[in-house]
Amino acid sequence: MRLGVEFVPYMEMDRMVALARLVERLRFSQIWVCDHYHNRQVYVVLTRLAMATSSVGLGPGVTNPYTVHPAVTAAAIATVNEVSRGRALLGISAGDPLFLRTVGLGQEKPVKAVEEAVKIIRGLLSGKSVTFEGEVFTCRGAKLRFSPGGHIPVYIGGRRERMLMLAGRLADGALINASHVDDIREAVEFVKRGGKRRKTFDMVAYMAVSLDKDRDTAGRLARGVVSFIASSAPESSLRRHGIRDEEVERVRRFILSGRIEKAREAVTWRMIEAFSVTGQPEILAERVEEIRKLGITTVVIGSPIGKDKPAVLRWISRKLL
Image 1: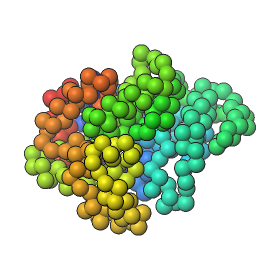
Image 2 (image 1 turned 90 degrees about the vertical axis):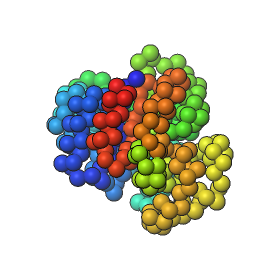
Image 3 (image 1 turned 45 degrees about the vertical axis):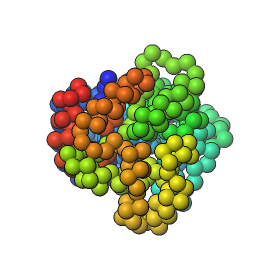
Image 4 (image 1 turned 120 degrees about the vertical axis):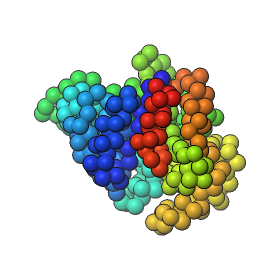
């Protein structure tokens, strides 16, 4: 099984570069950089990381088709592919609805938007002139004026049935935004329903991870990430884990009003256990072994990772690679 790491670019650039070099030395296969407007710009970060590394795959995990047109995404990821000498990956989904609302954007036809975006991006990355009239996007003779430099794998991320079915039908891989075994099992089935996939299809569990010998410390670190995951979790997952609607709605209200610390405080331990792998390091090894049996081919170690990220990543490399 391959391992990847998520970088959230609130970190200083030099710190991310040092961490990327460590990740590569530790034999991780992928680095995914999350794409939110309030953090450092994702393609600038990816370009800097590409210049500092030589073998690890690099991509946005994930971008969305609303904040920029798919043609701009195609040009950006093709540039990263050139700088990295063929190591670019592209993760795309419909984006976080709460963050999109803060800049006046809605998720119009999210599955269709992602499908059309992938088709446009792939057409442009193939070097073709793209004329496309869709329900969400339009291109009229759009074309890149430089070579993208070979195939760039496209991953579709998500947790809900229709988006994951689209991943199974259209993408090179699925980024399953889930951490609990039962949620991952359900998501894998959704991907499989999408249709026949190539043998090289990458089934990725993109898990929120917070490891520390002290469980309470790990839990405190996980609260911020879990608040956003819980706020947009599918109903099936909330019911499965016994999380009440009013608990989630309270978290949502705090996020929408910009009271992020209050949203963190509103996260319950039940949410942490459902939407992250949190606790002593051994819990991650157990979870990886469980989901390996479900057909997962790559595990992404998502934010927050731990209080001492390098130490946690070294432990993971020793135990799991």
